[in-house]
Length: 248
Image (tube, rainbow, N blue to C red; front, side):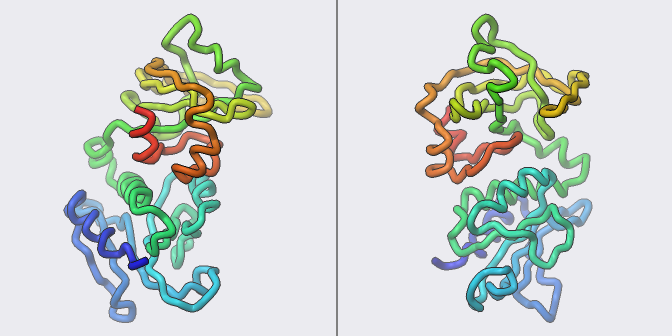
C-alpha cells in the first residue's frame, strides 16, 4: 500500500493549520509539525529502514512519531501490529506508527489528536479539548457492576486520568462478561476520595449517569478486537471513532 505520509500532512494542515517543516539537511524527508504558541512538536514523520525499527527487511518505510501521556495506554498500543516504541526519541512516552496501512488512517488521526492535546500549552488545552469518548474497565470480582444501575441511574466511579465532565464513558465489564454493557455521561469529576488495597487505588471519584444499556453479546471482547483493533482494556482508554459511532 502507498504511504499515508501525504494523508497525514493533509490532516494536520486542515485540522490544526500546521506547517510542515523540514529542519535537517542530513534528513531531507524528515518532517515536523508543531504548535504555533509553545513551538512543541506534536508529530514527526520519518523514512526509516525496517531493520532500524526492529523489523525484518531493509526496505525504507515512513513512520509517524507521536507523544502520549498515559504509559499504560502506550504499553497496550505496543501490542498492536504497526505500532512501535518511538524511533530516535529516548523518552518512553513516544510511539512510532507505520504509515504503510498496517494501522488504519482513522486510528492514526486519533493518535495525532492525542499527541496534539498532550503537547499543547495549558491555555490551548482548555480551548481545544472537546467532549471525549472513553472505554473504562469494571471488574465484577470487586464490584457488582451488573446491578449497579438497578435502583438509580447515577453512581460514583473511580475517575480515570484525563476524564472530564461532559465526556462519555462506555463501561467494559471484565470476565466472565467480557463486553461493554453501559453508556454513561460524566456529570461531575474530581470528587475527593482516598482508597487503597492490594488490587485498587482510588484518588478521586466521578459521577456518571446511565444513558444506555447494551446486550452482553453485542460488543464483546472478540468484537472489539476483530472489528475495532482493541486488544486490551486494563485502564481508561479513548474509544475509536468507529466504535463510538456504533455505540451511539
